[in-house]
Image (spheres, rainbow, N blue to C red):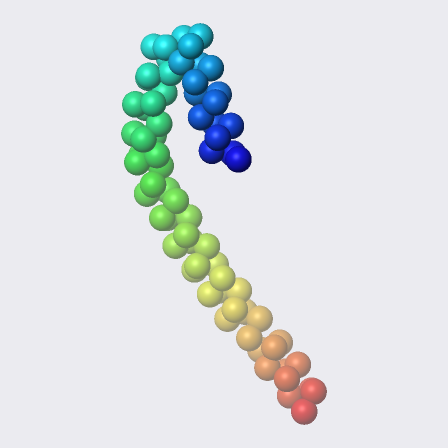
Length: 69
């Protein structure tokens, strides 16, 4: 549904101002490629922070397991 709405909005832009629509069609993939390294960096930083959080909370989880036994 979202893809169809995006396509319809692009068609409206194409009818109203075709140079802008064609520029958006060309610029969007370039912007996506420029932002791709930041997405990869975000995934790496998120993974590192999750690992750090797991290491910090490990003693509490171990004590909780010992207390249940």
